[in-house]
Figure 1 (cartoon, helix red, strand yellow):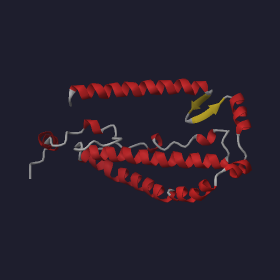
Figure 2 (figure 1 turned 45 degrees about the horizontal axis):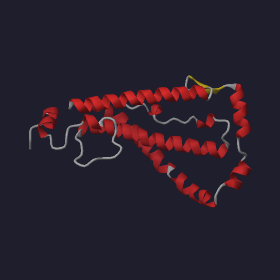
Figure 3 (figure 1 turned 180 degrees about the vertical axis):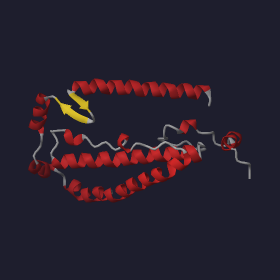
Figure 4 (figure 1 turned 90 degrees about the horizontal axis):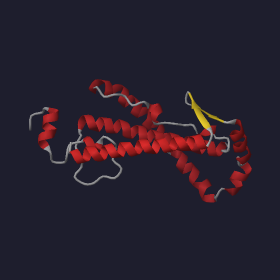
Length: 189
């Protein structure tokens, strides 16, 4: 890989680590700890959060009609998301061992923890759980797809692609037949 590209990738990783450190500072600011994947707020903070919870009647009264109408459409996506979830798990359990690809830990991507926030009412907690699940499954799918792509077709596209996964930068350049064939050790057709 080009030395300049490697250097840029290293800078990106350093910036990501810096960003995570800043998030740690924010976590301390809001007085909570993670203990064995459980969130623990200080008692005083939890009491303040409970005082800020909006009751369900007030929540429904203040909701716009468009939000109420759109909700069934939004929640209807849970069916394909669950099917995707099951399909992804089966796919990696069956195929990854065959090709020596390391399995993706689902729990690293599907994080549902906002229900610990005492300032959210039941509907808000459900909404947050749904979004955590939906975005987690999409991220899980992307990770599985990127590992699969790295194994089978690690070639960059000719056109610029927005939002590429982290492995993409390691792929062969579009048109670099020699490097691709050397990797795959396949004879040209």
